[in-house]
Length: 319
Ligand SMILES: Nc1ncnc2c1ncn2[C@@H]1O[C@H](COP(=O)(O)OP(=O)(O)OP(=O)(O)O)[C@@H](O)[C@H]1O
Image (tube, rainbow, N blue to C red):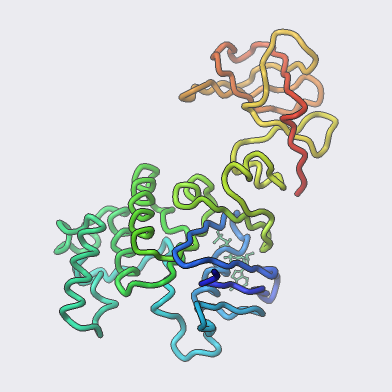
């Protein structure tokens, strides 16, 4: 049953439309990721969902409550819906413990103390409680910001690329920890990102946004095997345009390398990756460069190679 509902949301700025009739219904505790490139409308969407930006049309509902926008509400935003973005603002001159406690100042002191203790423990921040934010790493500071947002036990958490300042290892660890925490607390989550890998680490269901429109929704398998647009296909791997066929593509892993055949090229670059070598092959006719996998690490820069693929692996893509 729908709990957090975004209904036909649109947003037009003076020069352009950022969002075209976006609708989404989430059940309580459900998590979804919205993946889109820069400028696709992700931040506008989340700010509207949080009641922090006024939409051009459409409504946001949390249970039976319509979320009012800044034009309708004196103090914009809701405790029940928290938005976290990469530029978190911790208070620089107060300790980690005080930062997490800040949203709870008007709460009962006993409750406040217990809640802050729980968050410090859950996020592994206990031993840093007396430090100032500047004495923590970027990843730890981002954890503090998330713990602070969760202090008031929001029903809905909106994550706007909150991990982009972190290195890959820190990021993967934080996403894993956060996923467990959010599942445990039954928080409803929308996570927006341009990074499919991050999205798949947090959620199973992905919604793809392009130029303010939803182009596809599904799980990893559905999107990978049946991408509707070039953008969706490229989220999973590069794609190679088949010469003479303007909308047909093949993935690097679906190309076989042979010493005989019809589609001739020569290797212009080679990279050693964990399970295979990745080659760049310049085609003889037309001059396009294909990216192909060489699982047997057989070919070197300068080698001639023939490229084969099965027709059933060809992706026919638009947009
Ligand atoms: N205040 C504004 N005034 C005018 N145009 C805006 C404003 N805010 C955003 N836009 C435009 O609306 C479109 C969507 O922007 P938005 O920030 O929502 O996208 P995004 O997917 O979050 O991008 P990014 O990942 O780069 O933050 C962009 O083309 C942007 O230039």
